[in-house]
Structure formats: structure tokens, C-alpha cells
Image (cartoon, rainbow, N blue to C red; front, side, top):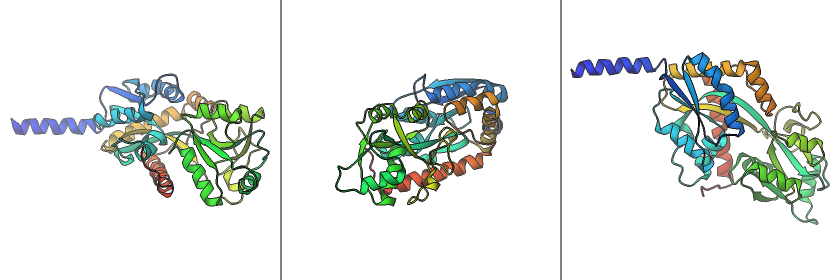
Length: 319
């Protein structure tokens, strides 16, 4: 009987390596109504069709997205649950949030979903019109020191700004906010001097209306939304300042290769759908080209290495 049970269990395990359970849960680590939630629900119909099974979106918000990550990791590694996440939840939280027990390596990237560029903006009345002028102003000791805002200690915007300060040997006071929305409001109100913002939502409109002065985009080329704003490669004094914020679909690290490949094919079908691509582009994201899970893993590992090095350089500690 023991032998028969063992053989049956082995057969079941082999079946799971090719096809997840009849229900797939796509976890969004934030409440309903946000951009991540809309992205997940935009993927849902295509995932159901390609996987030939029901797909539900489950919103598990709280604790900077870490509760949703923990929910994924507490479940089986069989492809029955996926997580839609970005660097905040799966790379930065283990570095900056006290009590987070998981590591980035506990997760495996199935596919990239889209990437966002950051834009360095200054309040309109700061008196700087170019990145070079901002650097000159920061170096001018005869004037009051400047402040920059980010959407939280240990956020990718915070780490990128500290990278800039180090490269240029300049200083500015960090003002952390609880989210980008409050930062946008305070920048527009002149309560903080400059900052890095994701080029999403109404940021481009605020730039075009003159509320913000855009100084550079953190990409290797100019952004179609802001064709007059130089890329990081065009400004002098900075190297490797390309910060492209990627979203991922991830699963637990122990998920079998065959399951990951099947899920990746389904996600790539979503990305190839013209309506879904148009939706992503409407949010300011750049959809990726079709890619293998190995390519998504390469992006993911590069992001992990980069943010860890930056966190170590500024002696960032969990709090």
C-alpha cells in the first residue's frame, strides 16, 4: 500500500508540473481601484482563455504590499497563485521594512509586465530650467540648501536620488512622503524643491501645464510623452542613471519550470493583446516585447543587485 501511495503521489506531482490546479489566483498586493488592480483585471480574461481555467483577482493590501507577498509564499509552489508586483514589494521591502522575513530570492519572475520611466522635476518657481542648472544651484553655498522629495525612505526614487548625489558630490535634504500623491501635491505647492516621480497619471500634464519643470527622464532615450526632455544619457556628470521601474508576475521560487513556462506563455499572450497594450501605454507604461522566463529572471536579478548595492552604499537599515 505504501508503494502504491508513493507511486500515486509521484504521478500527481508530475501532473502538477505541467498544469496548475483548476483555479488560478492572481494576487494584487494593494486594495481595489489602483493601477495594479486595473492591470490584473485587464489580464484576467486572457489568462482564463489561455490557461483554460478560472482566474480570480484577489486584493490583499497592507504593510507596503508585503502581506500579499507573504500570502503567495505561504501557498503551494504549483502555479495556482501568481503575484503582480514591482520592486517596492519584492525587492525593497525586505531591505527597509522591519519584520519582513522573506527575501527577493524566494520569488521567481515569470514575466515582465511593463516598465515606467522616472522623471526628475523641479517646482516651477525654483529658477532652474535644465539639469545642469539644478546641479549648479545645489553647489551654490551662498543660497539655502535644497530639498528633494521621495515616496518613502528606501523607495526606488530615494535610492536613485542618493545615487545622483553621490555621483555629482552634491547635497540636498531628503523629505520622505507616504506615497507619490502627497509628494506631487507638495511639489506643486512649492513645499519641496524637486524630486523623482514615475511618469504616470497626471505627472505629464502637470509638466505640460508648467506646474513642474522637467529636467530629465531616467531612461536611455527620450520619452514620447515628453519629447523635449533629455534622457539620462544626454546629461553630463551622470553614468548608469537609467532607472526603469519594471512590474513582474512572480511565483514562489520552487515552482517547476514547466509550470513557469506555461504561465509565462499566458502572460505573454496578454501583453501581445492590442487592447491590453493600449491600456498599459495609457498608464504611462512601456509593454515589453515577447520574452522567455529566463529574460524576466535576468531583469529581476539585475534589479535586485542594483537596489541592494544602493541600499548598502547609503547604509540603509530596516525600520
